[in-house]
Length: 272
Image 1 (cartoon, helix red, strand yellow):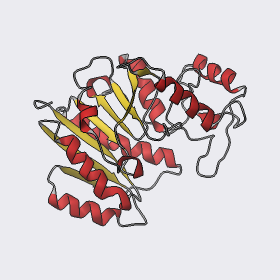
Image 2 (cartoon, rainbow, N blue to C red; image 1 turned 180 degrees about the vertical axis):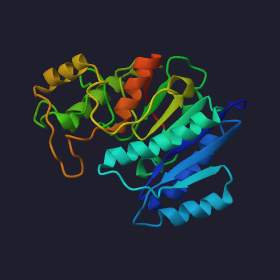
Image 3 (tube, helix red, strand yellow; image 1 turned 120 degrees about the horizontal axis):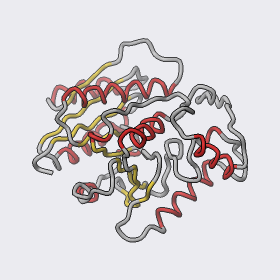
Image 4 (tube, rainbow, N blue to C red; image 1 turned 135 degrees about the vertical axis):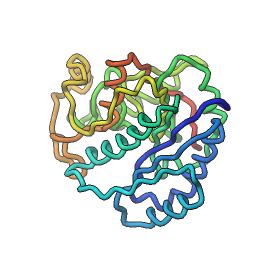
């Protein structure tokens, strides 16, 4: 992609142990493009994340570092959505990035990256959002929506019929059974890293709230049947089910509704 630019972005909170390797991987990704920017939204941490980011910022003029000084929102997913939307604002304002990458800066992406896997998908037109499998298993069930599990696994009873591991086994089986070269269609997927065609997501935004007005009712009913459970609004402590959902679900659902975006998963492992 020697003739186009890309923006690589994401939030950072308590990511200190992983930042050196993640930033190294980002530079390798950036080398695939004509030019790139790194947009980082830092939130108050209990480790050395900020000092590492400031030092890196001084060395690399491609970095746009935003240090959050606003009042925190009461719920975790709302804060993460706010951070990701801040990155999106920069992308939209610049209006020059045909692609952008949203990623986490934690242990998932501090392994060794195989950029050849990423680069071979650039010329394909069968995706608008592309995430990847992870080893040893696909882990991000929170952001995943795929029929019949179309909604949040946290909002159904965690019993023998529907829980994290049931859906994890389901997605792994679907990925393993894909014909050679094909991508898996879904409603939402992130898995710590996803690349986007900007034009399809220009009217979308992240939202960490429950959005029953955006996720079609038939999808929720489909999940309820598969889970053999009604919707529950459970307080898990770290997640308040009445007020929170994964921020990626709304982001992808809006892009499907507004722009007919193709959300896909590659069975290949990008970081290993």
